[in-house]
Structures are given as structure tokens and as C-alpha cells.
Image 1: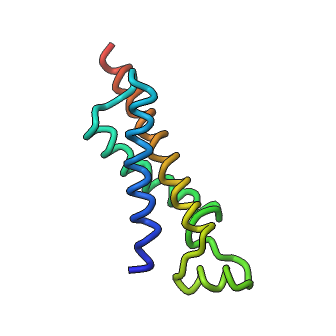
Image 2: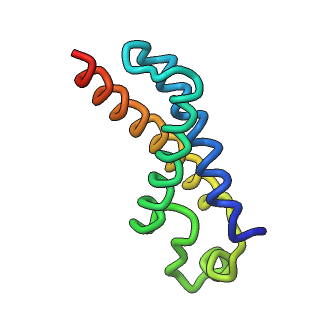
Length: 107
């Protein structure tokens, strides 16, 4: 279960990020369900991109205790915060991009 925790955090915070972005950018909002779905996708993608860049969960490259814990599948506070940030920002960004595309297509 611990190996799925970063993904779950990214998806949940992505959904929240998509809905927050929808509330802040009312002209780009896709509705509650649309914002949530776009946020889920964006959260998963954003978290994975940060992980590949070495900033999110699973980015253990050091030999210190935190790196060893992450490499063994454990999570420390920085990997949790990385998952939250990547998910939330990714969710908001993807929701905004889809909102812009939707608005452009409706004109």
C-alpha cells in the first residue's frame, strides 16, 4: 500500500487543485465534475513529472537515511510535500489548459 500512497496523494490534491483553479478562473471552469476529472489527470501527470525530475516521491538518489527510506518504499515529509505540490499544481494547470481549449473551440 505504501507504494501507492504518493499516487493517491497526487490524485486527491490534483482534484482539489483543479477545483480551486476552477473557482479562481471562472471563465475557464469546466464545472465541478469536469474540474475534478481534469484535476485527477493533471495531478497524476504533474506528480509523475516532478518525480522524473527528482523533486517528488520516489526521487531518492542519496545514501543518507531519508534517501534509503524512500528507496525502500517509505515516505518522508519532503516526498509527501512534493506529491501534494505536484498534484495540486498539475491539476490546476491541466484544468486551465482544457478550459482554454474548450473556450477556443466554442468561439
